[in-house]
Image 1 (cartoon, helix red, strand yellow):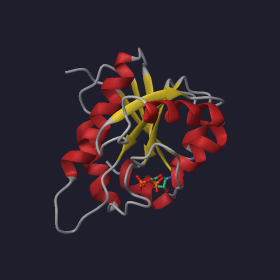
Image 2 (image 1 turned 90 degrees about the horizontal axis):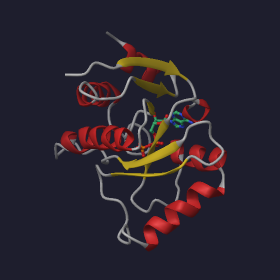
Image 3 (image 1 turned 30 degrees about the vertical axis):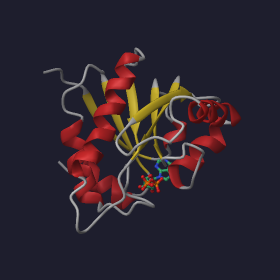
Image 4 (image 1 turned 90 degrees about the vertical axis):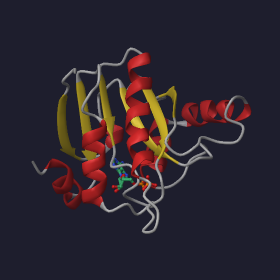
Amino acid sequence: MDVATIEYVLGDITEQEVDVIVNAANSSLLGGGGVDGAIHRKGGPEILAECRKLRAGHYGGGLKTGQAVATTAGRLRARHVVHTVGPVWSATEDRSALLADCHRNSLDLAAELGARTIAFPAISTGIYRWPVEDAARIAHEAVQDTELDLIRFVLFDQRTYDAFARP
Ligand code: ADP
């Protein structure tokens, strides 16, 4: 099993200097609120242009929950944005495996792209309402075995940071 460095940063994922920034996208791939909106705003129109091409091609029906796809990072300091669709929280259905898939598929795609470093937001914990402590546990487990050197979780507020960074 390979061991990567895992770090936690309180801040804005669009500012990160890593090979890959992961976007908590929605299935349309055509932009949204939260971290998705921030990435498109700061990365510029090139990212959306590539997303539109994906929708016109292989991803005509949109990106399924748990899947991941890569585009340019436009004006961001990263080389690629990997878009993944987190599951919406459900109190009646266990969707944990889908949240783990988001992390695993993003890591695998990053490795295929030759990336060494990656930054993740707290996928599904915003508009999709996943309880932060539980999302942190699932994210941690999912990133344990990877070829990459560095995994950075970038948390946007203190409460989310505390949930992720707690030993
Ligand atoms: P989802 O739809 O998967 O819940 P959101 O974007 O609504 O995605 O929220 C996911 C997490 O990203 C939340 O914790 C939210 O506070 C956080 N977030 C929002 N903007 C940023 C940003 N610029 N950098 C890092 N995290 C962010």
